[in-house]
Amino acid sequence: MDGPAIAPAAPEATAGTPGPDTLDGTWNLVASQCGDPASEGRLTIQGNKFTFPTSDCTVGTSEVQTNYTSVSLGCSGAANRQLNISIRPGVMRMTEGSTTLTYYRCM
Image (cartoon, rainbow, N blue to C red; front, side):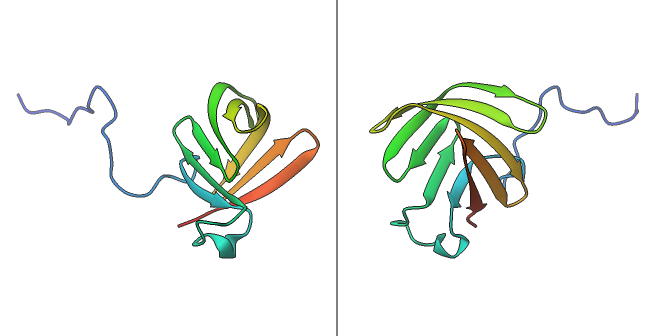
């Protein structure tokens, strides 16, 4: 019997660049330094791993709030960190204590 197409039971993987609402990828405090692997403002995020220039961190817990996500990081080479992260296309704002930094997505 012919009928309407049925959606797959689970989402299908797609190829391409990460969507604007994902953290995965390389970020930098200075957009013009995105191509510099030695940049002190570089941050790489892959899944639950955050790689800063001076430490490697793993997400312990995260909690979605209205306008941001609160993330607890366990780090080697540095103290553990508590971050509030908000994202919009191409830009991530990261607040730690009273300091807010703006990271730019590297392409």
